[in-house]
Length: 416
Image 1: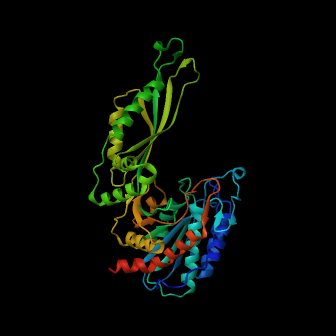
Image 2 (image 1 turned 180 degrees about the horizontal axis):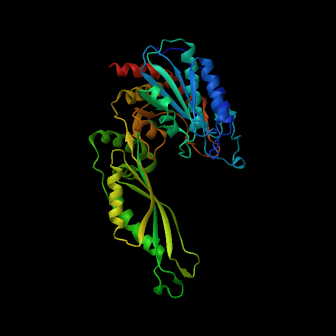
């Protein structure tokens, strides 16, 4: 496909976006059946072969495929569930309202607007009968916002995904903020800990007769946080350019030192702490939940071992529960990253950083399934906010990038 191939009209992209936003897919409960039916009909009408994959009937996932002249497969991924909203707090309809260049509604920028651009690009590519250099596929998934198992985890574990065997994946998450553009090529690992401290109850008027579980827990947390945040990562050379571009991207909003610390050391957030029954009693039990994040390439198991060694100094404090994920990344000079960054830069006329996300989403699951994956979309700074919106310009730019990528990616694979 040449770069001057006709692109989907802005009104068609807006129509699809408005239709998608009009479905109430707040998660929880996350019932996306009507939305997936809509997307299935759209892609099937365009000429794609479609298939449903589900473990929860209310949260189906859709795979759709359009053969190209090779079996090298570029997969586009988008989720159709959204975070909740309080309609009374909005000044625009959270289920879709167009006002000039803006389309308001929950999910407009995360990520029904980018998904609409993907679908409009799919229609145009299929209608043009363009002899695509790659097979084009779509994965429309549920359950992303809660990190549930019914969405991408179900999909990548399915026989249908194994048969598809995608060679690369682009997820339409908004990755551009405050006029700065980026493609997300990495995510961070995480360790979620639940700590429990035991103590001895006593009356608040005679605290020396008891052992305060909250105090014990706080002492353990304080040392743990100090040791973890003081640990400097020894990152592989392949991670260094990602870190440098990540720091450059986040510096205007976070400051240079904070931006660098995000990737040079673990971050630790004390999310909850609970204990005690009354102000005049010494608590005999307390719990806390901590969120530890690690730069891609860091061995999560090693950090978890350090956590256990630290807590060994506090016999009254134990790990009641622990869950973790391993960070992932793509090489910045890989064909997928180069294709997306170059195409987005050409469309926007501006620099596109290749950065790490500060958290992690569906990209992590797809990468761990062995598929090179990036996230990219133009959008606004209103993700999860009241009066969330996207713009016609952002969606049109997204559609152009997504329409051009099959050719650009194929050229990179062939050394072009």
